[in-house]
Image 1 (cartoon, rainbow, N blue to C red):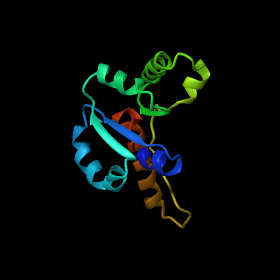
Image 2 (image 1 turned 90 degrees about the vertical axis):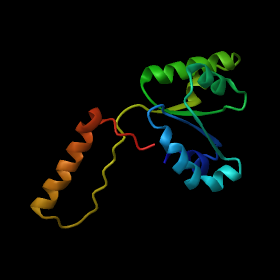
Image 3 (image 1 turned 45 degrees about the horizontal axis):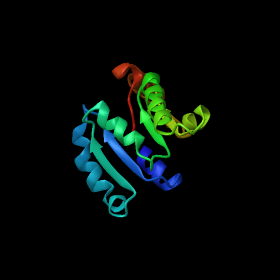
Length: 140
């Protein structure tokens, strides 16, 4: 979702650095996002090391970074961007970073006539989404 939002809505090329626990996502991303990749709007890499990440973030072509992680991760990204762009103000660097830092588990319940059992089921699913994995169910 984040890739499509950044490419299609914000018109930003995207490099996805896959989380070390989910390198298996590279193959389906390559298939699904192939039209964007062949046009140069999408690329991906594995999370090899912090040094590789810092090198990616320090590239002069980087104008925006969207991350999924903690506040400390967002701060670390801002610090690298600031070092790579010393002439930019800290507020400009902060504006270059967007983050998904917590639970992103949207639930859409359409208007309708629901039975008590259906509403209980939906409530159970929402509670499960909030409780499983400490509520950190990333959709990116």
